[in-house]
Image (cartoon, rainbow, N blue to C red; front, side):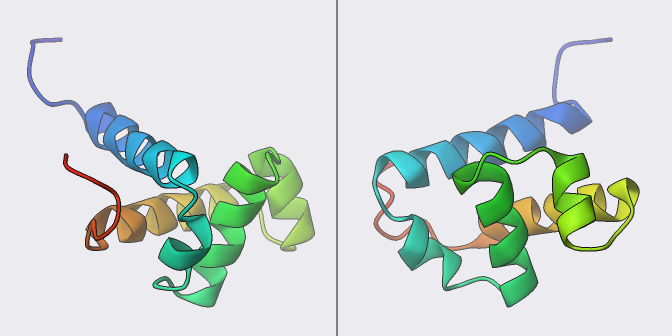
Length: 88
């Protein structure tokens, strides 16, 4: 693969953003800006540290559906204004 942006780089950036939010203690504030199902899946994955298969079971979804929901939630998180998260 050539150097440059890969599809994975966006995921790392979003996970990094989420890590910054957690470190800053702003999880609750940031999560309120997301739709309820996104808040739930992000909370289960990152605050409760559950695996995607476990999340799928809890939400009564397929693993693929839970992965898709988590991906959409991460994208929504990345689109939120970075207010309070410090300089990027």
